[in-house]
Length: 287
Figure 1 (cartoon, rainbow, N blue to C red):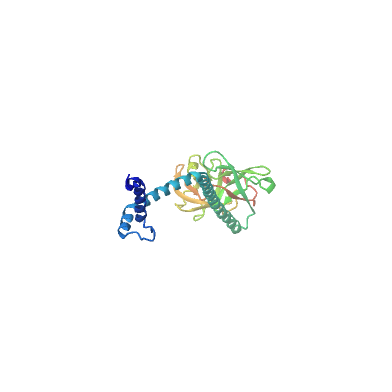
Figure 2 (cartoon, one colour):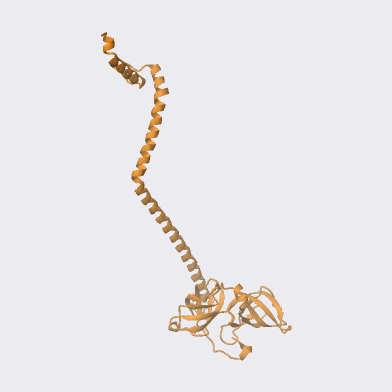
């Protein structure tokens, strides 16, 4: 057999290996790869090699994710908990900010009303419904609270103490249909009675009745406590007149009063412990 036939397979394999090495730009026995072969290598082999590398990288990343999916989930849960804690802290901070503003307002009111002996209280309960027409506060006999004492906020009068226990008391608001307060229209000096009304209570309003027909009371006038009857101290702000109408055959005028206090959001109040002897003149004197 000719030597070619005997070594043909080895020759072919060697030639293929040599060509591959040349295409890859590798020195073979000190001989540089041919310039033409560099072009072939860059054009044919490198794009294939890059594609295989990208595929390999994605496969590697996928298996890395599978190996670390537990830790990724734990980190996600940790970050979610941190976010919830932040939201909770933000809400608590806003709540404290609002409470601080309310307490500052009460303190300013107390300092401006130094003639009155006042004690702070927190609202701890209320009647059913959206309005604080009857509510409970966290001070009672142990703090010197008595029936008939006026209850206010920095915005004005809100009610009177009607029931007292050792450590809490019940308050009747001025918008309740059972409430009656002697008032004065600040601009005109006209006296009347502020009565709660079951229908107007749903709007946070009350009626000022028995106002003189000769009064020139008008919308926007301020209503304050008159001090008549000896229950409420004189001059406590109540609210503004919304409108005025004649009543009972034009014998007197009635005004709709919008109290300044918010009877849907009561949290902190002041109880005025300064009291005066109650003067009972029947229906005329009132409170």
